[in-house]
Image 1 (cartoon, rainbow, N blue to C red):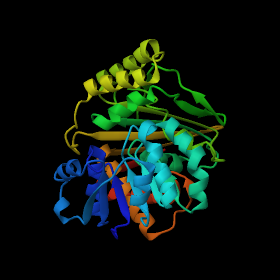
Image 2: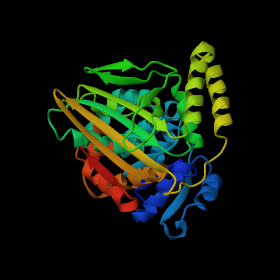
Image 3: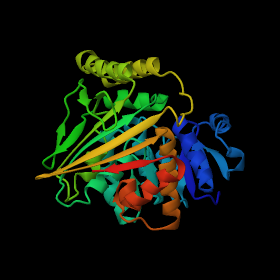
Image 4: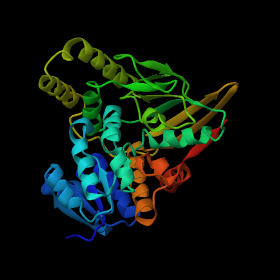
Length: 368
């Protein structure tokens, strides 16, 4: 039985390897787990500095029983195995059974809402966190949201994530799986579906041209703030600066609505997987700080009040590794600020998560 308290599940994937990299930076011993020991071994060879990390590799079946056995006696699991709508609930249930803190990297809003209802109360009763979306597209936006909410007259959030880069294989698989679910935003304390197969032009701070944005699953902010007394409305849109790619994603969603949606579920999943494979058949190269720059902004709106926070930074996938490792470090040393279904910021504080970003990448925060 290993004495290591942290499990990185899906460690051979692009994001899993980044989490392992930053576990090393935080000097956190970990178990690199997945369904194939040989694939994990090959994947971890590509992690910078892995020879100085304290880790071991464990092969485990993707079942509640096998994962529960692996997690018994541990403290934290970082889950990267998606699409989460297909595979995530198994890991959440195992974490609940084993009484460990759970976090993942999902952007699948319907999955988030489902596990909140099914498992949130159990995690809260156990004093543990159920924290999906501890990842780039969501944590910086929530940091910015909390900054604008420092003005207590703000009650509406309009958020945009503008990333420069290419989605990973796993992210591409996820976005096409998302086509099968509703994407919602919060409007006057009610969750309202976005229109399918459509993009929106967004004027992003610091950008010359408008960006073509998409709900990209609906985002995490509506789920996190749905029951927050400070917020009555929240919208979140995502854009990649590669406009032709985004035009293709939106066109494919419309194609799904018009031609695939009425097929049997197994045929839908097969068709979407084929499309995703064609768009991103392998792992993208490691990000470059001088190329993969990002902008996240939140407009806070109240009656007669406007307050905006903009966060400029870079290398978004690496930031996902930072957030996962930083929150793990916090949980190994401290009790979470809030338990049950929570975000990383709700568990550790938005200033802590912002500080984690600043440790590893250049960050500029504008508030006006």
